Every structure is written in C-alpha cells, then in structure tokens.
Amino acid sequence: MTPVQLWLPTFFGGVARPGLRRDMQRLFRTRTTENVMWSVPGWAGPPRWTQEGAGVSCLIGDTLECVRILHVGVNGAVVGPAAAAFPGLSVVGMLDAWLDGDFTRLAPCDPGQRLRVKMPHPVNGGVALVEAEVTLPGANFFPITHVGDERVFAQWPPRPDMPATVSPEMESASSSADAPDRSLRLRLAWLAPFDELQPLVISPDDVLARDKMRLIADASGGDCARARAQAMTEAREWVSEGQASLNEVWLQPIIAGEGEQGALIAIEARYRVSAGSLEQAYKNIELRARLSALIPVTRAWGVPGLMWALLLDRLSVARPYRTCERCGALIAGRGHKRFCSAADNAGCFRARKAEDKRRGRARESARR
Image (cartoon, rainbow, N blue to C red; front, side, top):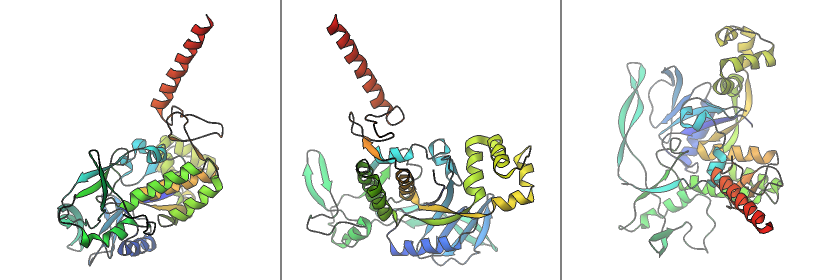
C-alpha cells in the first residue's frame, strides 16, 4: 500500500468549517518533525517544545484543535501518537470495516455541556498541560421528516427540491436558529474499531464521507477507473500531498510490524549497511542522512481521510469491490469472486460452508 501520513484531530471532525480549513493550512505549512500540533486562539507561549519525548508545537489559530501525526507504512503498520488505538497497530482490515460496518450511533448530549480537557499553557518560559473547560458546539439541526414504528427519521437536506448536500454540518448549522425548543439533543458516536480514533465531536460530514465511499466501492465492480476518478473528486478536501522522512514512513513501520531484526534486514537489503542493533545502525552518519530525507506521501485528515486514502490505493491497482451474493456485503478480490471469504466476513463464510455441506448431504441422500 501507499504510505500515509495521518493527521488525527482530537476535538472536532469534519473539514468544512472555514476556521478549521485555515488552521489546517497553517499546520501543514508549519510542521517539521513534530508528533503533536496544537492550534489555540490567542496562543502566547513558545512555538515548540518537547513533551514526554515527543516533539510538540502550537500556533495561533482560529479554532482549538490538537492533532496527532501518525504514519502508516507499506506493510500497514501504524506508528506515532495514538497508534495503540488501531487494532493490532495496523490499518489492515479497517477499510472493509468502514465500508461494511454498522458502527455509527446516536447518543444523548447536553449542548451546553462543558468538558474538561488538557490544554497547553505557558508556564515560566515553558509549557504545561493544564485542565480547562471547553464548551463543544452543538449547532447542527436535522429536522424530523417522519415518524415510523418506534423510530424517528431525520435527514439533510429535508426536502427533495433542495440542492444536494455538500457539507451537512455547515448547511444544517445555518438553520439551527430555527430549531424548536423541544428537540432531540443527540451527538454522533462510533463503536469499535473506530471508537478510540473518533474526535470528541463527530461531524455529520464524517458520516456523509463514509456513505459516499460505500456508493463508490459498490460502483467499482462495474467500472473501476470511473469509480477511482469519482473517489479522487470526493476525497480532495480530506486528502492532499505531504512530505515525511523515510524514517517515519519506511523504517519505523517496519520496526513496529516486524521488530528490530526485520528492520536490520531491511536496512541491509536497501542500503547495504550491516549492523548488530538499531542503535548501532543509527550511528551510521550516511544512513541517518538517508533516513532523514523527505519524500512525498499521501496526507490524510482524520479517520475519513485515512479511509479515502486506503480506498484510492485499492482502486488504483484495479481491485474493485463486488457484492457477496449471499449476504450483500462489499467484498474485494479476484474478478470471479462471488462470496465472502473468511477474511471478508467469517460469519457469512462459515454459514455458506455449512449450507454447502447440507446441500451435499441432501444430494447424496437423493442418489441413494
């Protein structure tokens, strides 16, 4: 797979808010080797410092945000802050879970709730993380369209004669002043395997991005090239080109996925540098210079950005999705593949094998 530099926000999902988009560009321009970057309105402290061995920076921003910067290697291994939130420290299987999983939930919330979060604060020429109260926005307003049996349906846009939505977060927020006093106060939440990766506030735009990916993946079985072109158009707000060092996107993921011995073998194979340990290898001046070289990488914002990057990578090698003839789930693989494999959906795979055995026994009994 193509290496990915993942910018994982802590507080807010989505990418459409103007203040956030400006801060994203500021962060992209400023980053050198930091693992954590903050944007804080009115920041008056130092621009960079070290915290628990990790490089941290902070700039004056329009919005409050803390972004953790991770890297995904060609082996799918994830390194960096919050890497432990990925199952098996890897992105393998996560795209399929994103496309096929039912992990989005609505949870009750108090729009005026003040959360206590740790924020950087200048202290005696340095920086300390101190608890502060933050009020999270809850301006989105999705009108109820109809009520069914034990279920309430809401949608955006609320009427079919309205323009197709581009950012339900921004469009519905403009109507929030018209929200009735008696409203359902709900907030989006994710279940595993994305629960540890979600920001404090998930945007409706995050869910819209997933729905678009599902439609594109479903269409890729008929025309993979057209599906990829559509994916590139839809992903442009989430995915861009960035830079990262070879150490970040090549060596560190090998260490995470294959251990020290695997990394030493890779170093010797690629650079003809033989060493008994990584500590010894890093003492090689020429190797350090090569590992610090910057190369282009796919830069993805948030979990939706990562999923767009993974989907584009899959479609770029003409691996379209098809639909399992048994359960209807999206599957990837060879062109003649018709059903879920054990890796796609273990439950569907076992059930189909059991059905095959029953049919086999029935045919055998009919021949007797």
